[in-house]
Length: 605
Image (cartoon, rainbow, N blue to C red):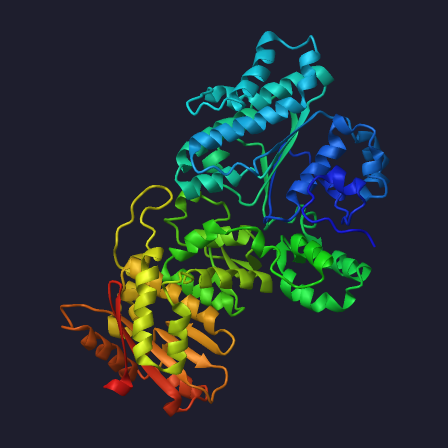
């Protein structure tokens, strides 16, 4: 039984140490024979992108010439043609994985540091008489700039744009062979730029860098780029007409990243864990790439082999700040669909698989594209509808580990110690109306502003208006309040908070209750229904309403109006049909005025 290495991403080191490795060297042949100029492959984080890029470098780079020991016994070494190809090309390997600055200037400086490190790897070239004075100066200029601590230091953009191309030109003259360029985690700086509000600056800069490196570069043989997202062509790839894009929807390279079920089960057998196959499948299986299903998350599998216990290994490797930001400020419809996903149901949505980061705030469906690309949701199948065959994706949560990730995210919205959220839930279950009022006001006061994002990452302000502007159901489609859920009559900021509140309830009560929102029952749509799994227990109907001074003089009148709506629309019908006794159903009316909340029950009327 070989040793498991956690986090080792250097192929040479992994192979030399004899650690656990699943053979993916057939990727070398599949990519080389595609003859694509520039290949962009997107996969979720921790799916072996960096290790596979390191493998490509070890195979093709003349730095590793004669290193048959790195590939003997693996599938690629069975082909004589590829044994002759190993170690025969100059290779430039770039990684943007650590470029995570919160402003454009620091991002630019970090990029220079990355490029300077690459130049240092080829510093042997300085001993060659073939270098011109300008080329020698470029080595010095990049190094001096990288080591200069002056905050006002500067370097021309053009120098950075052309740096990789210029190095390729030198390597081409030196070895009389065109260069292979590998760029790992190309989109990391872009995600940071979106979150921190300097997207437009970085896009312009990156577009010029990519153009010089990958298109107008006569010294490049071919290239591979990897990342998590497929950033739209219009953003940074507008000049790259030689780009082949491989996403999670593509069939190419579908088995290269992640582990197949056969590979996982064989590993479990080898580590004497054969009896854990079913639970491992439930927690770590479910990813789909193209037509290939049953792909397992390799990071969690490796950690499970090492620790021999189920845990949220993959979910814990990232803060998920971008997903959290978008989900928190999403429209009510998105949060409702998340309710269905948390219940392991499939939903049908349409989206563009190209991520346009500066559209994430404007296009409510863009978040689905990001969640699929990130691996949190999987595509079950696609339907093409209408005259223009618009794709409609049937998607679901990938596995139990990702459900756990979402649950922790939603619970985290209310972890402010001043919120006393768990105390409110306890009071709700106990039917203590006095404590419910006290703690709900604590929750609203402590967390309401958390859902008000103020300025978008793009820097544009967002007006406070009705949630109906998003073309949601009920009110948004022109129905009266009495015909629809009151959730859709709330302001945009309010609706974010209240739908987030519902997701929090789903997580908090999931063991003993099913929580539904904005569903039809009787003659209308209730806001929230809490259904006990044990039908002899108490069920609850919650109706939310924003206080309108023109309609009700006091919050008490607003509460009464909410409770009356529950009775008039016969919302209890669904509960009674499910086997809950009438006397076991509680009604609660919630009246909101800004961050102030008043809760009442029909027992007080």
